[in-house]
Image (cartoon, rainbow over all chains, first blue to last red; front, side, top):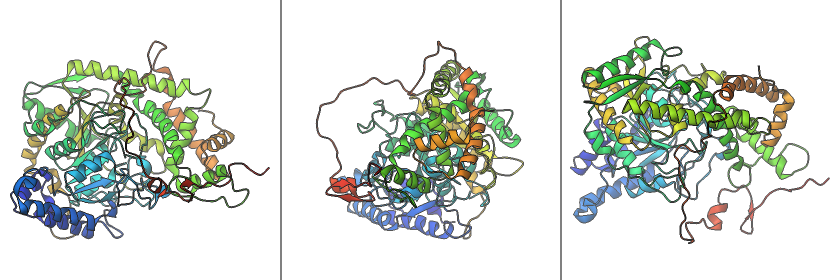
Length: 509
Length: 98
């Protein structure tokens, strides 16, 4: 395979600044790869829109600045000219933003998300918009209105969700970097099942302005990549305080890259979360997880077991809080301000009936299910028992984390209980689908950062297993330090990155 | 199992402004009952002394100067609207004729 597409973003950045390759060549190589493996009946289908013209124009602009030299060339961002894919939940001027939903099919945003403004300022060519479960609701990308994405490791399996498109694009070498959003695991779980890296930053570390809201108190934009260092480079670029997001933190997050370049676990206390394992976890997932823990112990980490007894309520609390926020956030899709408008087949043409017909036609099954569930949880008579109790559970989970972080610097668990399952396998069983996020949800409820990195292949099916690291709020740098250390220990065992073991797609490797 | 009838779902769907067929209502009632059963243990998790958390990272309100910030032009704001007239969103009748 072309080295331009198998390189990490950090490697590409070096080659670009050394003028060994041009940005245009790099962008073109990725667009060619997209053309080669993304389309057709058995294509990966990571992309909903490919942005060739603009991507190449930005790449040529970077090349021209570099060729001219001087202050402008010196001032280029280290990632200038390194292409990126964007989850189609994040709004972009000049490209459609659909959120994976018929209700927004073809919609053009009149403004850019803050993260997009930062990416444009740093001159990363945007390759296109990636597929997702409708409004980021799902764990398999099968709830996209525009068809599922396939897992590059096995095209009959799911790439995780909701950000299956971003993870698959990176795993299939269609992009070195991508943006995701994570409400209950939508960056980390796709990372786990595709053998890639995904990070949910501390809530507020990256502006949510321009990410179409699913559950505002849980949503977070974060990086998707093939290495821990690449994720750090991208999080530093997109992070920082934003006056357009009232929940944005003012803390600096500027030591992430340094942490990723200085991976080490010597003397660090690493807590194995007792409740995130056992029943429901695949044997091969647990085996790779134990191997990773032993590697860390061998590298000088002090491994302790921690207990988070209230995590057993996390999934329940999440499936009350999230749909409640969904029912409110999705009320704006009313057939008036943007997107689809459908007129009722018969009867009087009132706005209320137009809304009913528009939302019936525009939303898919899972979106409807969550809106109705949220409407139920917020109704008079149930509010205290459901929504109110779920918010109390949130407090209990934060206390569990506080206690665990008193004993350990970083927590560790499998990212997802299983490897990638078959397309269609869980589509008719919402509860089975929801269980995929059992290990990732606690971080969203508490606002703490989480990182998933490849932990190897499960013995029974040869598919990637994800290892999740969790740190206290605002301590994202710890994830990168430990993540980079574990990554290099594992890659030393494998003799290279895990993705080198993935089956060949498209052309000759 | 949680008692969620088809009429309950019809009422919720009406509140949520989603038109649903009788078949959809039946299916949703069954699914909702299952999901509610699976999540209802949260109501037993915390006692009355546990405060609720609505936001993951505690923040306090701050003030800024009252200056005009970034705003969309009427053209931008209306660019995705299904119908517009005179710089305004245009909607079908608000009230039924009856």
